[in-house]
Image 1 (cartoon, rainbow, N blue to C red):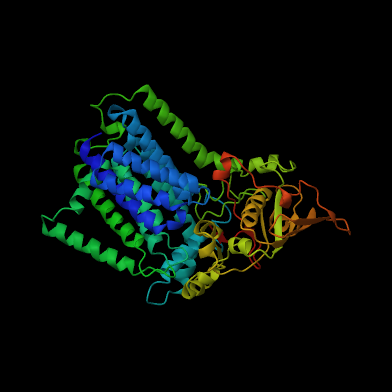
Image 2 (tube, rainbow, N blue to C red; image 1 turned 90 degrees about the vertical axis):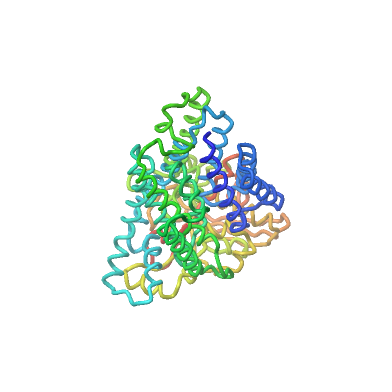
Length: 551
């Protein structure tokens, strides 16, 4: 691997991972993982080399793997590309094709993010998360926003988001350098806007994670841009550009709106990465020649190097198969939901698909009548719960945390202004989510997800009472999700192993004791797939027909 590019990426990776380690401390399963990652990143930054960077990457990959499934979807993305990078390091200098391989996988992730938003919930301007993001940004303006602008923005936001993410991914995948520059520009713009969006949708760490790995889209230009960034300016234009970048980063830090945090340092970091990316685009456009690439070349830019070995080719094929499965097949089968490549998409992963042309949760449909299996039990509707632990998690409405002005503008633009964030509550842990607003409404979820979360409640030793309905079949419309009932169940647990369970069929008058394989009495699903299996609760929100914005 050519030295300058490797050193540049090693230091970029180490610096951003140190920031993320501090930023997302709730993703650390135990303190010794933090120490291992921190020491590894420091070593990789001070003395960048295959061994130091490889050791740091292994520590971080293991940390996320242990913490899973309570990790962001982007954690799965970076674990895949970082393990791919480790594979290329192990394959030897002659076999390093990390640029082309990582670019391919990042492009597929972005394509998947846009693809799974092609569903009736996200494309509905009245419910879409896209409208909430766009109007929340408009709410930051010091002036009033005309109703016509709000309506136009709310209506256009879903299509623009889908088109933008698909275009971003396709451009990153494209063979032409000009198209790749467009892809990097779209990514920098997208992640900067997400970074400054007001709480509860301010997600700057996502941009730090992704933009850093877009290094591999133009490795030579990124190497030159990063080298410039830490060097003294040699021209007036260079000095002005640095001054503007620093001023923009400082200004963006003032948009921090997460409660309890004075400055979210991931916001200025994301801003600075966007400026470095913009400089890399300019350098690549000026050169527009493979000879200017200083290292980490992709296969189109390394014609003078030895061909990849059979091991490298088989490894790349295996990783590509894994990513294609993760992006395009895992959700149709129902293997993933929260951990899928579909942030803020509103894709329906139980009770039938709302995608325009793709099925979802096929395993749950096929196994719906199989009591006790990891996929069986169908769909349940939780109607009441006394568990503080469970109610802090699900259904997770966060509407009242939206800025009041954003709620006002959303309603003026024709949006229902309702949002749920169960993903954040799962990731943040019980101490933080106990401080978040809690508003209970009935919700549906797969039977195996109810088993999983009840396992967490019981592990906490909390006594609780729970009432839920089991729905007939595994697929239905919104009326089915709200009202259809095959049987009703009342479960009481004393938190010490003592349980009482009663069941009543929809057409019966009397209650009876539950069978041993009743959903609420079964242990949580186990096995390797438990590392990716967290499923959204779908709220039955009064006045909202269909799924509201949620992530």
